Image 1 (cartoon, rainbow, N blue to C red):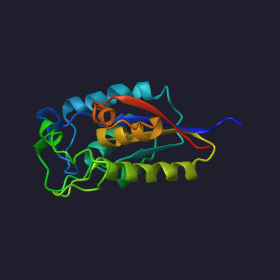
Image 2: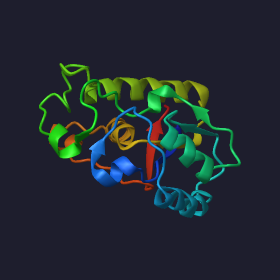
Image 3: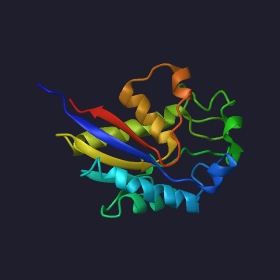
Length: 187
């Protein structure tokens, strides 16, 4: 029996002011810059090479709402909170290089830091829950477009590629407006 797969086409939202400054804003709302809107408009044509999509899912964060409207206006996106950016608790507006030094930031042991930020474990758990729902919804496989954040793309990569090395997990970055492709086995 041939294994069935869901092909995940994952787009990280376009550039935002926080991306330019190197700040991590988590679930704080941040709109796209003019360049971010242009990035999304440019990749719209490329995404047609992966279509048709069974469905289009997006984070409900404003930067992803804007992005999905630009890259897939012909679809009615499903906004799913499990695709939202990491909850930062009291760690908002730190620079990313400062947060990477926090030993709990990429923890696979606890779900929250003492500052209330989601760890990698928390992201993996909610991303796995999302994937389980996709498997139930699309049991025969197909292609799904996701417009989300680097953190969720990293979780998708870890789960679909069975990455187990914590150092490798920590090195992952999904640049703005880049398209990534992952395959999720159904059976």
